[in-house]
Structure formats: C-alpha cells, structure tokens
Figure 1 (cartoon, helix red, strand yellow):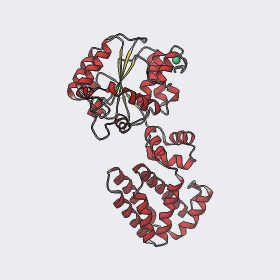
Figure 2 (figure 1 turned 45 degrees about the horizontal axis):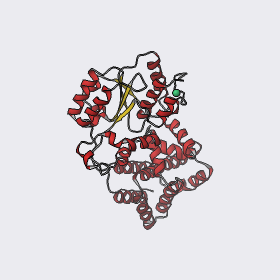
Figure 3 (figure 1 turned 30 degrees about the horizontal axis):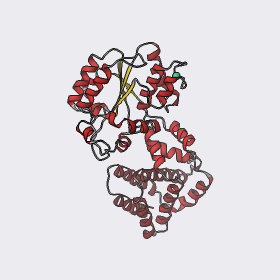
Figure 4 (figure 1 turned 135 degrees about the vertical axis):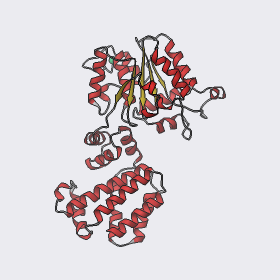
Length: 377
Ligand SMILES: [Zn+2]
C-alpha cells in the first residue's frame, strides 16, 4: 500500500513522509481514528515507505521487492498483533495459549482484501464473532520475543498492534516496559479506536497521530468511481458513512442496488398520501426485514427526499438538486403535502436512525415511522 493509494488524510501522508525523510520518526506511533478511516493502511504504507528501495516524492515505488512483499502483507520484518479469543479454528494445543499469530493467515487475507476493515470484520474472519477479543499477556510475551530477534532485511522490526485498547492490564504493563526500553530498531505502530481505554502511561510513550474523517464530497467521489454509483446515491452513502471509508464500503457492499431504496421511499410517501394505512404498513413491513445498513441507507435517502420536497414547497426547487424524473415527482407531490409534514417527518426519520443503532426492534421502528408519515402528511 502506497500513501497515494489511501483515501483521504492527504496532510497526514505528507507529514509521515517528512518525519521519515527528516529522521524524526519516534519509536512508537499511536494512530487514533474512528473505525474504517484508514489507520491500518497508513501503518502499512509507512512501513512500505521506510523499506522501499525506490522511494521518491514522499512515497514508496510500489514495485521493488520490499513493496511487493508489503502488498501481500508478507514483508518479514512487518509483524501484526491483534485481539483474539479461543476459536473453533484452533487445535486443542493452540487453544491452551492462543496468540494472534495462529490467526495470521485469516488476518492477512482480510486486511489485503480490505485495509479499512473494522473489528467486526476481523472477529468474523478469525471465527470469534460472539466473543470479546483481547490482547493477553501471552500475546505481550510473543511480541517481546519477536522484537528480541534481529531484523531480517530492514533496519527496523515493525510491530503493528491493532486495537491496543483491548489489552489486559498485565499485557499493557509488559508492553509498557518494551515501549520504555525498546530493543534497537523497534518501531511500534499502534492503531486505536478508543484511546480513552488505553493506559495513559502507554499513550504518553507514543507519538499520537489523529486521522481526520474523509470529507463528504470527497467520499462521494470515491464511491462514485469505485462502485459506479450515480452522484446522488454516492452522496447518500457518504452521509451515512460519516467520514469512514470502511463504513462507506461496507454499506455499499451490503446494499443490493440503491434504486429500490429510492423507490421504497416514494412508495411510503405515495401510500401515506393515498391514505392507505394497509399499504403504509406493507412498506413498513418490508423495511423491517432489511439489514441494518440498508435500513439506515433508507432513512438517509428519506431525509434527502424530505429536504427536497421542503425546498420545492418553498419555491426553491432549483436548489433541491433533483434529477429530472425526480424533479417531476417532487413537483407533483408538494402541493398535496401539508407544510407541517416536513419538520415532523424529518425528526421522525432521525429518531428511527438513532433507534436502529440502539438495536430497537425494526418492526416497532418502522411501524411507528409508517404511522407518523400517515398522520403527518
Ligand atoms: Zn518500493
């Protein structure tokens, strides 16, 4: 992974390159991000840049032997450690003292496929979905062992620790010793999603690097290109993702095509306007059977539609950005909708979004939302 292949955080790419070029890289960097913003990709790109034999203009070449090994996450001096738990994938012997290297193949396969993976993806990949993963003292010992050996090719031994906030206290204390007196040539790259859950003594030994959310318009462009979406669909996913590339990718991946989401928003509006509670409840029923990501996408799409209906009702249709088919639909609808609908409906959809995240029963959420559309419109 070259810096140039990572989405967003351009200032950080330049900053890391400069730290390396000016020899100001500390021996421990702590990347702080919301899940899916790309910190893991940055850790790998940094290792690749440090070890590239053809680096220029602040980025690795992507072609030298070291870069090629990095592309498969198989560079021998680049190591990974992450939270685990016992898993059916392990042998009885391994289950006694599980460490993350037992899961390395699954980890590498996940991370090369999608460097913006989140902890849910990771736990699914290593088969511990329903358990809490942890970095235990066994793992900390393994880290110490790896770092005590001489590097193979690099002048560094690079240890990427994913979610150090999931260390047990015992493991964190062991790691603290390593951070205080690291073996020569050690480079720690820590990726945290909850810095507040880390020991402050560990944090204070690290150079803290915060990732920024990818800006919404930039995200929409990324999604348009990568998934062949139209501008409007891409913008809705971008809104949903709140700056996390990983979240955006998984939302698009979980959707079966977005056309039907827009159609389903129209179905609910049409049914409510037709004063058919039976049809309204039919749509609500369909919505409650969708996956959570798709339900959230529906809500974001509905909010977008309500906004367009509202501005059109105010005679400002030209700033609603609707395509011509949609503009026609909106023009026909607005004269039939009460002026009080927009604010109340928007608030109801917002509540639904929040309740989806809070794991409230989808049947209740969408039955309630359907009723409100029916009453408010
Ligand atoms: Zn290279």
